Length: 225
Image 1 (cartoon, rainbow, N blue to C red):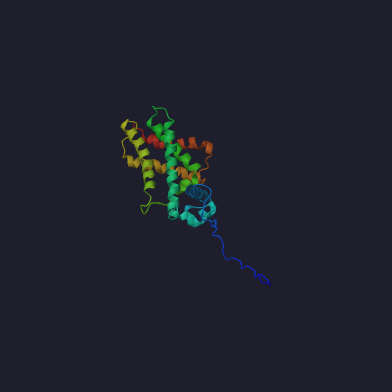
Image 2: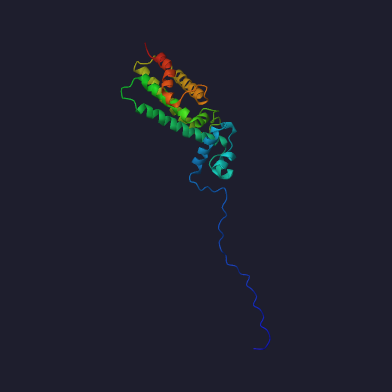
């Protein structure tokens, strides 16, 4: 070995290929079911405003995700509102069917219809934001939401079946069922809407007796004399 200094060893430019951890983005959702969270947030926001003022951006912000994540579940605001309405009609149907199930087997036709009326009004007053979406601007103008239309039809058929049964049993006068359904629904909707906006100041504990008083004349008019 000759004298002199040893040349410094050049540093290697090699770097191991270590996989990088993906950067977290606001598009990810870590609270569970994003669809249902968006639906719940929409209902909460409508409680303080109106369905027309709602935006997907605002709903996404409430849940804590980027608005792009919301668009993976709902094409637009109307689709989100339709989902809220669908859930609402399912709950309304359950409430009305449960009310019928609590009656004795031999309950008269008027008693059964009154039970539906009380359940309907109670649902509306207990869930005013959801109810306003269900009965606000028609959401299926373009025919996109078949499930929503089917649920509305089921609610209609439930009322129609009770009215028809009352006619067949001779307890109700024979009048076109379609007209009776619309009459019942108009009365229920009007009373519920006035109670929600406090035009009629009805305490929740007195809602059932009030409902019975409001629907009494309607049911008396149905009865065959």
